[in-house]
Image 1 (cartoon, rainbow, N blue to C red):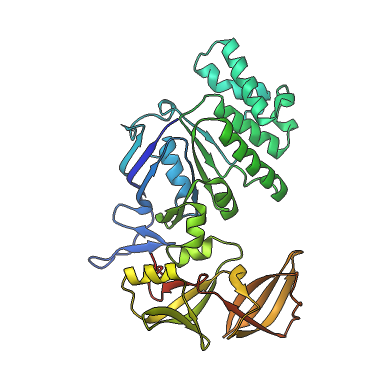
Image 2: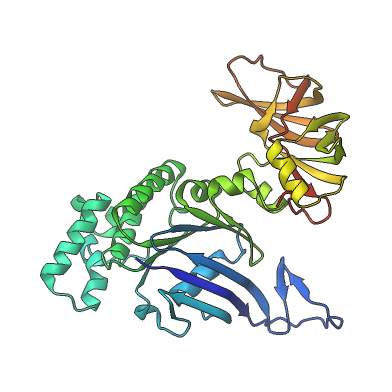
Length: 388
């Protein structure tokens, strides 16, 4: 129901600690965050255009600035710099209650003395809506979320998943322009998280609103988002669809953060022979796929030492010119085996299907290879993807 535009958004918290005097022209780093004379920069140069009814997920490690960004959109944090627009209207100085935004918190934030019905009806009563309309909206939301039978109960009589449904119901009864969710599933156990993820996907199809969802869980980001925004130290690292950031990570941080288990990283060389790019690892040369050839050529990338990334599921035990490591541990996962191995002094993970493969024991040699379509090449010093 609404589009958003975040233009050069910045959040600075005044630095209350006594700061060492930095040399002229230098800036400090505090826990990865930039520290200037103004204070600690929690979010810097955040630029994002969010389309009507789009589901955006902000993802990153703790302290990266994702929740701070969400709270600035909600109006719960003052914007230190930049402009926030909702449907083309600048709302930097608009009160939270006047932004037509609803927020679901990690802690549910339900009133313990009220029933489920009363909790959901509360924001509508504040709007002085008539009783018949309130009743209709509450019951519609309860039906969508499957909590009709709990309307007369109080929060203490509900499970964690049921409480979270109530918190979501209280938000959607208002039919807000934008629905913000701040790590809403982090208090639930793994099974409930999976169930609630599915519920949120269903909910998204049933209500017409724009979602901004914050999580540190990459599985939630990949399954829920139309686009995901990966953040680190208050800075956007990459914006794209889940498939885009998985297939073409912008840098080593994104490559390591997205994907489970994380991407294997090797010290390798990028070479060019007869006009074709190839990577050389452990004496084995692998020619890169055509699409990678085109991107590297377009960027006029020169042969160089690189960090080579290959995802565990893209390593194979079948092929020619095999690389050889030693199995340290293997984990039987039913349909696949996870081999934790050592190769050239580094720990790597190889994932292979159980069908058609003989299990290799601990301490035994494991021979593996990879295709030219699975290789990601990163600048050794900056960590930037050379294809980007």
